[in-house]
Length: 355
Length: 248
Image (tube, rainbow over the protein chains, first blue to last red):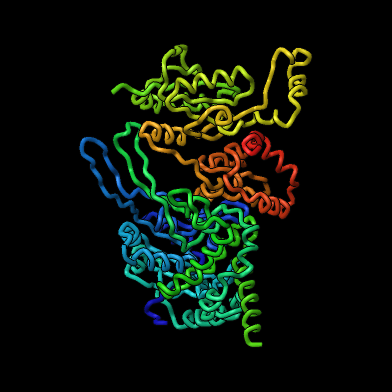
């Protein structure tokens, strides 16, 4: 912890800071939607913002990979005219949890791989991320400690951590520094507050415990043994294929491409929309063949996309432990429970081998 | 090139779907730039004797007269579109199929029921071939325009084969089940952009069941939320009763 990278702001002045931020930038922050639901929305005053919130309905991924995104415009006529389009906006995301920052890091990894997603990479440059550290669990659905997303590491411009009297702010980029300078509300950190931060982080090791009865490093092996596990069959009868789990996932990035024309039938656009491996038409191809007809196969695919395939390709687990998929599932499919069942079943197999 | 001749016809229905078309507002001006509306009782008195390029059929088929009439329209139409729930899935008129026909007739017309012969309610595709389906009670205007553009471009239109939840979640609505309400979204075909839920209402399931609903799974979910199964079945039957004719 380099003391010169840290700044302080009194907790009582956080609203003042937010209002100042709004006067300079387009600010997006968590707001309350009722019934313990929250959403990231553009805010007009600091009063709308909830600093204490459980993960929003949709992750901030919606600003990096819009739900509907125009990718080209065309004009039909004697000659076809085509113009590629990139949609972007200067935004400051305030109050992003470390799990969601982990999600954006996953997206960065995939979308800067070849073929590069240029529109995404341009949009990313225009977004500033101000994180807020969780000192406690949001609820029982979270498994952020298991995937190591509960402590801020990288992927943000500023990170706010709540201490007894101050927010201590880690300045992690020049974009973050610009905000500190423009709002003129921060002072340098002192040794006492740095000590307080150290104590808090130490405490977090006690508050946050590994939520899954295994270690992260055993996950590839576990999934290598689990392709025919009975859990998948249980999911077959439970899953409604509503696609909620993938829509709310910070690391799902599958999309469909569609086209629309104006009523004149002369001009139109090609756009992409979020799509989901859980839905019936996803793996359907010409001839009406469906590569993943069974709900069990679709759910299994989802879990392998989070915990196996991307480890080979990117060396990363693509679960951020945010708990959204379990929170939103009407059928009560719970990520922590599925992983635990896989572990139990696989343990039994290993013991049989030894005996 | 002359503009395609388009007509609207109504059968057993409330004509609300045609009203949705009439209520397109300024878009109607763009619409008549590209099509020639030759018959549309809801908004004009003129009739057309010749052939139709595109016929929109609103309403379900509930008596022998209607069967004859829709067959004639089919013969004269290059493309036939089922417009709205009554036409695509039988809609609320399908509830008649839960009763004995004589009993239903007597309930409505009293002793005079013999003068009003009736048949089991049918969706349009259960009587004649249908080329395009526009679901909804009423239809969702943006989907109507999308389908119309597909027709004019000669492209197929695929009704989404996934539930309303998909669109609803993207609209970031608070789930109705979180509010303690029973919503048909999880088993209802999407395509309406979760119109009702965006406006604070539950989904009534007007677009019909998804192609591959996990009925048992949904019943388990309802049990978890303490919702009785027959309550759900009634909700499903409100729009989906004619589906049984497809299955038999």
